Image (cartoon, rainbow, N blue to C red):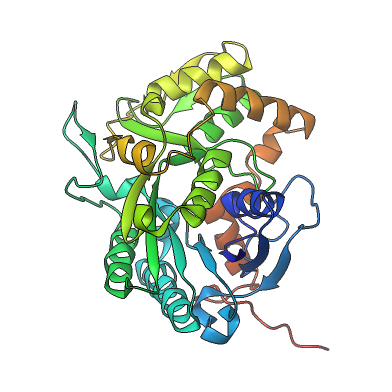
Length: 346
């Protein structure tokens, strides 16, 4: 299959693109390059890489493409809060621009990177299913809900959108991030000798390894149309619903049983949800989560040690998305719409 991956140079996109190639698919990666160089070490992509902003995609860009994995977005709650209008422009309007171009170009399968954050805050003791009421609490989550709703309006005989509501990602990727909860805890443990909780740790959060998330996109592309057409899937596993405090302890144990500390004045996190993953197990039996939080914490520990992580590296802008974009704006590399600023020649 000839596949376009948007956000191909991102945390999940790098892993997904490589795994698609390894599976025999022809991959074209679209990426705006906002996080170019955000790695401990660079390797050349094994796919065709193009500098493309999703806000500029046209049907001509997608001629001959059979499937799209749409990951490109401002990718978490703090980034969504940076500029709500910009978040809508990229995450919602950008998604729909790519989707309409894909439909016009005859693309049959469109796998959309949604998020379990659409559930917001669920009653204690209940696990959200794909049919649960959506309660997005942030601009990021609202952009995912809006995208799903508008994508459903495009669904038809020749265009099958699939909504992959991903659990919070963790695990090693060449485009590593410390602004993800378990990754962050491992980084704290390695560089400071403790894990610091910014909330009281009581909130529930489902998590999933970046490799497992990538494989879910592949399963969604390769599955029979009837199994996935216009369908939402929670992506993760029942065993990987964790309280935040438990994730802190898992990271602490992986690094050598370092202490877990609570920030003074830390309160409850309003985002708290457990999630059911029964549908993906039933409808996409070719996919299953293979990683646990404990295994992922050890994997990250080893990779970060190998790459010589220091405290300065832990706080480096390269590994925190909001910090990177803010710094690039301040340096004049990006304008207010996160477009590259042309530098005049002397």
